[in-house]
Length: 298
Image (cartoon, rainbow, N blue to C red; front, side, top):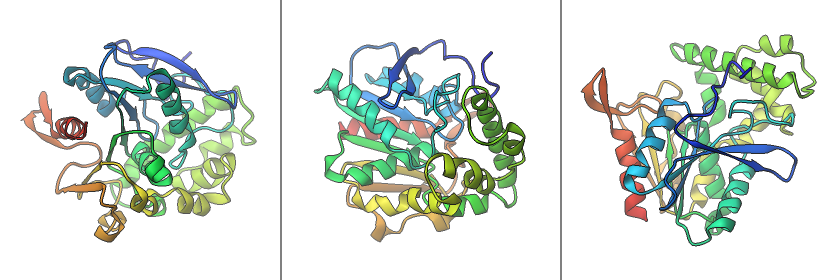
């Protein structure tokens, strides 16, 4: 059976499995067109090709002459990955490995990356780490947490607690499925009692991935400290009413490199940005803005 947290492969996309050097794998879902620039899409926490924002952008890319490739983080493609390690907000080795694979196949093909939420944090960290050595031409990050400790604190307040409850429950299901095939050194019952990001990251995410607790993980992996090192055209889209965070996490103008364009909207929520239409046929400003930026930077 498919784990409760993840659906089967998207029927309109082509699935490819990439074997990694550490014995694990990453599943890629491709649009069906075979030519044009490649655009890697990185989803958010507990996301997949079925996430609403991923479905929309993967549907839109071929219409603008681009190939979309949705990179599932480890364990998010419909079955548990093979190792205890999974994915986290600062895991940049996997996107680096996937880009290397794609470049070996088509060294001359233009390559861009879009990252949403957690995926946006991973993306900005990766861009800043590599600086001038980055092997892609342009990037877009959407609804980025920037400062992970602030996000974890904020998710314990107000309406944000509902979102935290939903996501933590999804993490419970994902790791329960993983525990059936991999020794996590924690029981499913122990994991199920971790009811906040702070607790989950301190007892699961941090130790599995080599961090000394949640504080160390948040300090090392928050993307805001890496933005100054970005050297390719990069668009960052944020909303002031994002329920996942406060405006205090936003980088200052001095922290932005000359290559980074930060656009703030009064409204847009978390990976929303609906510009109009009707409840039955909304218009998503977000997708048009992303595609326009990618085309202009090509």
